[in-house]
Length: 189
Image (cartoon, rainbow, N blue to C red):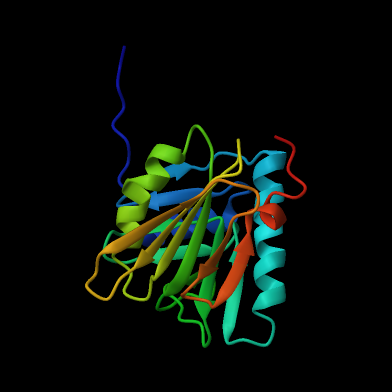
């Protein structure tokens, strides 16, 4: 069997290919990685999260982005697509780009069996290199369960967990309150 070495792409080559592609891919320091498709539950949680944030952040200086908005993490040379991302206005874009944001305050990822290990580990580590990043939510799609990581003044991250339908939590980075009952209202477990 012949093994063909994988090509190491530049960020510019990736962006050229990504714009022409019908499917989304992440870029991780030279490697192009296809992204998995979402489930109806995943999509419902993204939708619910977006509605909750939109209602509470109405007329606030923030922009909410969904899974199709590309994020550039320059310290790690990564382009990725968080499930939900909130960015302060005016929006900062990757230099030379009109389609890639760089300074999120808040990111939420909907966990699946295939992504939860990476979302908790490597991806969270990558996000923490972004100076504006203040809060990370991991939302389970198999049961009502949310992990909330909040950046502290000393650079440490405080972990809070919520797993009861009556649980409510406040996002200190955005000043909004989210209830698990609202988030999971239309999700069939």
